[in-house]
Length: 157
Image (cartoon, rainbow, N blue to C red; front, top):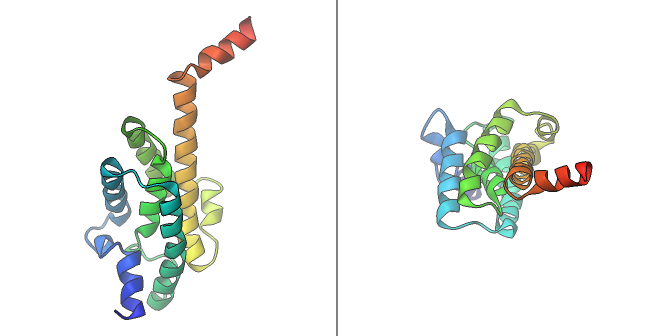
């Protein structure tokens, strides 16, 4: 396999990015399905993400575009980061938040997107995934794990 074909196959998740006009959402849903069947360890997502920085950068340079819409490995990695360590019941809200942050690009997601080449392609989704994961964990702690009760006790005791 020639290098350009590898960059295309990896960056588009074997062509998944070409299947629809909503490639990021479809790739995120596919990544979530994988997570339900086999929770991807964070080290594996990180390793695949590092490879994604290289391949997406090469693919984008070859296409003469900054962030081709068919490149979806970044959404896959971002989704896996968003759901890492969460139960399947909390994974769905994390997926939803990840997609929202990936689309509206709040600070620093929008700043990460401006990094050069493959780093910028991948970094905004990594940051969006981190945002989603942290927010879901905070809500879980506050409302499901007794965090709000502990805060209430400290304030009013």
